[in-house]
Image 1 (cartoon, rainbow, N blue to C red):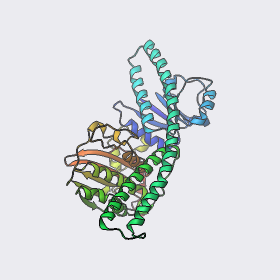
Image 2: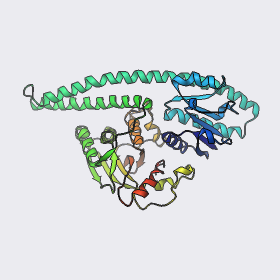
Image 3: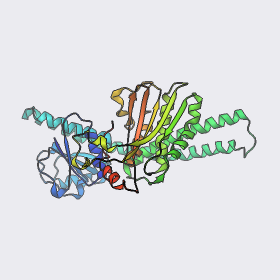
Image 4: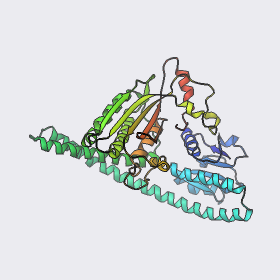
Length: 409
């Protein structure tokens, strides 16, 4: 199946490729501009079509998906002359785009074996569902905007309360005995966790609406790990969890936004502490990683995402956080990173879809990748970040960057 993406947005291209790699059916993703859009595509994705020259008559409306800003929907429909169209409101979510692409791939293969009359009936039902879906998207955006405003208001009193605890711990207002200090420290830790959850909800809500690039600068990953450990140490000590750290020095500088990567590590460690049994262990490893070589295993990668030559230089740095908690059901290893999703039960690693969803959002903003897997010694969550070089390996690392859409192991 040939899927044509009419867009200049590299992030959208990465997202489409990432989603399509989870499908069993064969596919090919190609990127085009409105001027050189191929006529033989099996499915078309039009990004921000309000400013494009698109066909006035669509051969089959079901073959086209339009990504439209909410305030441009009416104008877009007028430009189509009232024709029916599949619309996803921008900014698109991974879940909604995945659902539409899955539907398109399935419909394409069904058309090869379905009679004309059955296809017509199905398409009519599908159009009704699409119109209902458009309304649901509008309601979802309204709900998200309200949630963002509410969570923003929560953050100020949480910050103030945390500051008051710190003030009391410093004994600036008078002496405090050891038992009171311990209670205040536990209160402060709980408030910080609640504040992180509020920040995660706010980032997830606002992240869809505002495209934000991280403030990249050269930083030491050890500092991020040490600060994250400082945040979760009270939680780990309370359960007598042994934490081991083994970080190799990156072969080239890491350009990151330290606050974001620290938040990613805090979320993963917080998750690990929560599910590690009392007296268990958490292992943190950091090492160089040949990420681009994973891309060569995926024959369905678009041409622009494949390496043309081998690299002798590691192009990424990988962090593994393994704990001795229970295994994650394999069918949920990917869904636990979705927003506001869970697989229920007492061993739900998704945490309601907050901590892990914010991890994926932040790592993706760094053009990296985060995932989870089970090992013989317990679940392991990993993420990779691209390396930057100023020496002889700079050319190879830059070429490797074109392959950073690869899947994981």
